[in-house]
Amino acid sequence: MSRIGKQEIIIPEGVKASLNGAIFSVVGSKGILTKNFRDDIVITITGKVINLNIKRNDKFSKSLWGTYASHIKNMIQGVETPYQKKLILEGVGFKSEVKGKTLNFALGFSHPVIVPIPEGITATAEKNNITITGVDKELVGSFTASLRALKKPEPYKGKGIRYEGEIIRRKQGKKTV
Image (cartoon, rainbow, N blue to C red; front, side):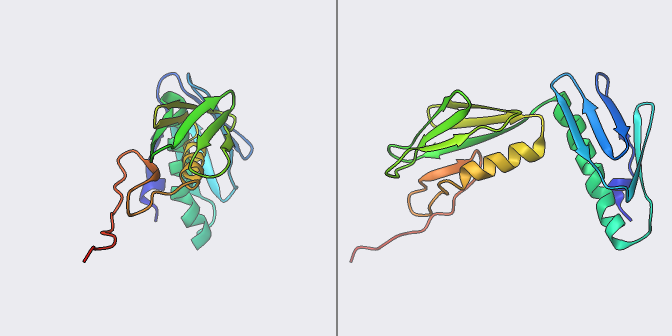
């Protein structure tokens, strides 16, 4: 039994949730989110409360129960206050800037790295700090991870793109005799 799926989800003031067939949508002051859910989980909206129940008592349905509850909570929280992730660019000559709908990086390669910013996300770059903001938690997380994958922090000097608050385990390097 899912402990998360059993809990009631309360819709806060200023947020509207609706279910049209298999499409669940949430409208808030910061934006609109829609998600397509399978029919294995029954979603019922009564007033300002959302309840989830399983249709069939099999392993797959039980595994989706808590997952769907978490998705709905994240959607409601995202349209209230947008999600934000910060990246730190560390290294000599490493630069980042936002030009229109693209992020331009100088990461020590022979060419500049240009990444398009997806729809629904805003990005700012100040000195060596990159801030990614958006209402969709999944989109913000995946875009931030793809930026970090461009130049992962290396263990000797710590150069690369890392999350704010991430601790890089350092290696000692060569010893001089």
